[in-house]
Each structure stands twice: as structure tokens, then as C-alpha cells.
Length: 65
Image (cartoon, rainbow, N blue to C red; front, side):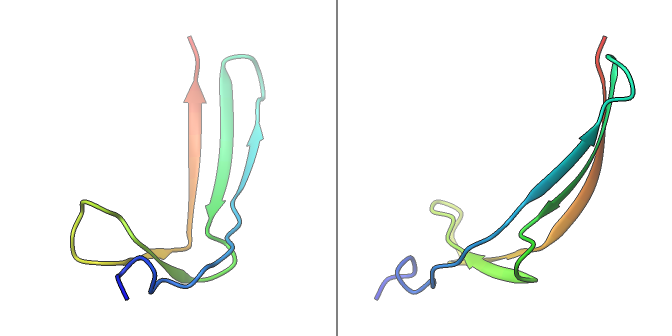
């Protein structure tokens, strides 16, 4: 069995909530991989086999000019 077929199937969910106080600014909060704390993924070409992808959260501020 190769590395790709040894990774079980999974379902993940992401969410992004954004607010535009005016036409120039946007503030966003993002959550990724919310259903599990970690899950394996295969990245061909990076070597080392499957990688553990963790749940993550971040904020983003965008200014348009």
C-alpha cells in the first residue's frame, strides 16, 4: 500500500467572517480545519510522507487604496 492510499478519508470545515466598516477597510477572522485538531494530508514532491495539518485561526486586515 502506498502512502497516499494509507491516508483515511476525512471531512473538514473552514469559516471566514468579514466586516467592511467602509469601502477601504475589511477585517476578517478565519478558522480552518475546524472538525479535528489534526489530520494527515499527502503533499507530493515535498518528501517525508504524510504531514499532520493542524486546526488554525487567524485574523486579517485589508486596506484598499
